[in-house]
Amino acid sequence: MKPTGTDPRILSLASEVVKSPEQNVPVVLLKLKEIINNTPLGSSELKKIKQDIYCYDLIRYCLLVLSQDYSRIQGGWATISQLTQILSHCCVGLEPGEDAEEFYNELLPSAAENFLILGRQLQTCFINAAKGEEKDELLHFFQIVTDSLFWLVGGHVQLIQNVLQSDHFLHLLQTDNVQIGSTVMTMVQNILHINSGDLLRIEAKTLHSILDEVIFKLLSTLSPVMRNTATKLLLLMAQSHQEILILLRLSACYKGLRSLLNKQEPGTEFCQEFRQLIRLLSPKVHQEVEEQKLHQAACLIQAYWKGFQTRKRLKKLPSAVIILQRNFRSKRAKILLELNRQKEEEDRRLQLQLQRQRAMRLSRELRLSMLEIVHPGQVEKHNQEIEEKSALIIQKHWRGYRERKNFLQQKPSLVEYKAAVILQRAGSQMSDVTSRELHSQAQERLQHYFMGRALEDRAQLHREALKAQISTNIEQLIKAPNLKEAEWKEPELFLSRSRPVVAKAKQDHFTTLKHIQAPWWKKLGEEAGDEIDVPKDELSVELGTLFIGGTKPP
Image (cartoon, rainbow, N blue to C red; front, side, top):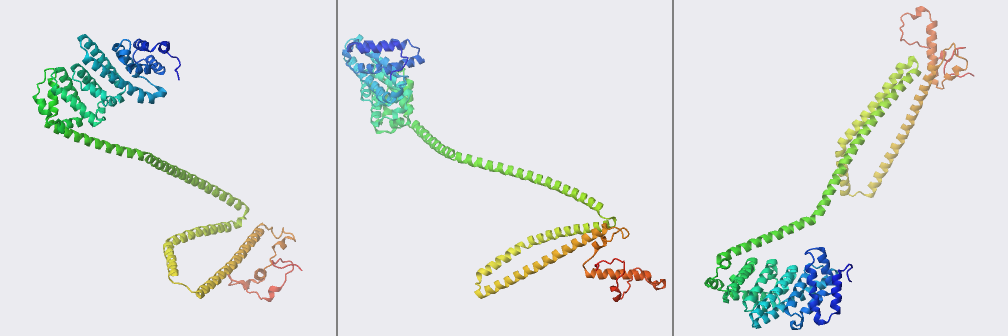
């Protein structure tokens, strides 16, 4: 999919590449250098131009040109070296978008491999060149290619492992030429400065080959430049990785390396790096390195352990947070429940207080209304009845409280008694005959209890009825008019159906009449409380107009 808003220069260049003959394509692609150089470095415009170059396959055209024979390309090594610069600058900082997998897995490794192949070809041409000017020119082109490779690797560090494991790279490193060897080792040194970790990810055989070549150049080359570069590279490798230092110190392949280095006469330019390398290979430094390695191992173990503990705590953190939230909410709910309970108790207490005050007010109003209704002669009796009722109520509540208290005190022993009964019942099996007898006894006692309770209920109802009748008669007597004012129908309201009451009324009436009609000398020696005997035959005498309760007119 072609991008929208493509730079017109890229469109024109892509069209020209398609229309140009094959031998003119490399020269046309050199115009990309001018476009890239005229765009500010690091700007969004440059990033867009690189995306347009990739989308219109101009990078692949560059790769195809670099894979051709240099002798068939117009401009030769000058054109090729500039195309390597263009290719490395276009690939660094490029965002391929949808084709990322193809770009990183195919195009970039292919570009790095082509750079190494071009380096080998330039190395061969340089060695075979006879003229000094031609060698200088080829060396210049070789440096451009290595710089382009370094720029590409610096932008995509995942290519370091591919470069170090390449056979073309090993062939470049194994050259005997001072200029080529120094340039390659300088490039390796710059690459390790970017990321030295990939040095241990390559195969052990390749790592040994690199170390062998660097040590060989250090010990066998007479050129100070080569020895200086080899010393710096070997020192960097030993300082970056303790595994390499231990390999140089203990491996049988490098046995006697320190003694050989001591026999060498370092130049004044790299005397400091040379002595530092010898000091690293000494036993004391080796012991320090071992201690440092153990220290780092301990730190690594601690880091893993702390990381494990941290991850374990982090895994438990959600459940811990949930438990904390649950406990907090439970505690808050309990607090709110307690506050509501206290509020309800306070409201209930206030309500009870208001009810008591209202009941007391109603009781007082009722008492006042009753005092207005009750006859003045019956006020004292009425108050006495109220006091008796109050005393009965107080006694009832007190007895209930006492019985409940006694029940609570006797409850443990009752529970023990029931438990003992259950144990005894479980322990001893009762026969059917005994069970029937106990059942019949229980039925008889229950029937006797219900019969007695029914009789008590009827007696209580009779007593209540009598009390109600007596109270009604008292109210009627209180409201009754005087005998002088009473009419002939009103005495009938006070007739009683009870014979004992009638007999008692007659006796009291005759006693009073006899005492009044008796002469004064018969009253001597009598007191107010003495009773007067009246014959029983006189009790049946009817008095003309005298009202006697309990009798009915014929």
